[in-house]
Image 1 (cartoon, helix red, strand yellow):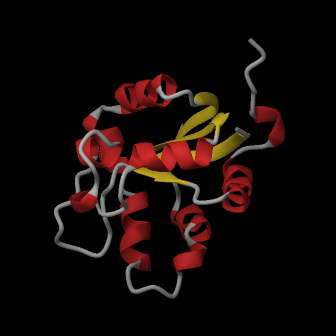
Image 2 (tube, helix red, strand yellow; image 1 turned 60 degrees about the vertical axis):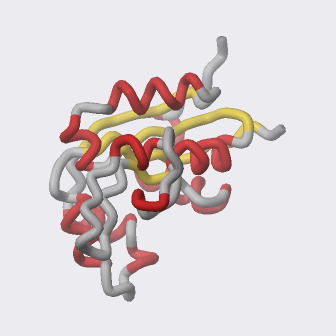
Length: 148
């Protein structure tokens, strides 16, 4: 097993529902330590930059609007195979296809009426993406790996 770090975002729909603590509990119960965290209300500029990889996709503007619609919790998770473990905890991108017991199954607000899934959480999809995404939100000195 390899200790990895991954970025996690609790999106505006889940923050509005007041389930931050429940989601954090799932991280910890599954061996994912929170080593950096902050709440912020993303600006349009931040959301556009963070999701720039999707700029040419038809859902880009709706995604940006969703991500700036309310505050988010951004955190760095660390643990054995953290990227894979967190992606399993999240469930399918489209909550309609998420397995029971996953974060998206339990907390997503998706109505199925648009291209942007209000799917409660975001997670990095690879080690390379994780590094870029973590650096987008956190300075190195803001990350506090567990020492005990």
